[in-house]
Every structure is written in C-alpha cells, then in structure tokens.
Length: 83
Image 1 (cartoon, one colour):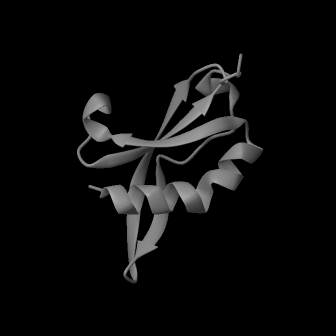
Image 2: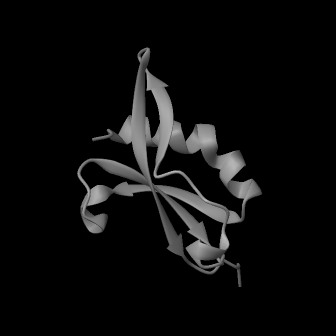
C-alpha cells in the first residue's frame, strides 16, 4: 500500500519515461476507485492500453532508503484541450 507522498514521488520519477511511450498525463489517485488500497499512479493515454508497449504493474521508488512499489494503472482518456 503506497502513501500519497510515495505515489507522488513515483509519478515524478517516472513521468518522462511514461510520456515517451504515449502517456499524455500522469496522475495520483486514491486506490479505492480501482479496487486497491492506498494510493496509485494513473497513466492516461489516448490509445487503448493494448496498443501501448507493455507497462509495468508497479512503479518502484525509494522512500527513506526502502524500495516501494506503487501500483500503475492505465486509463484511456482524450488529452485536455484549452478552449
């Protein structure tokens, strides 16, 4: 179970590599909405998940010297466009 701080750290550390494979936004959300406990990182993509390269189920980060695995979930969503 990841804390909010751990999930935010994982998002910050892995956002660039996720963007390189087609993820247009990366967020941190409570895991309850996805059937998980704690916090999760959500990768938003315009393409269906099956069209992306294989993404890991977890993003690994270090918090106070300990490795922490934060769940990574993929959701399909159109990119935001200012009007």
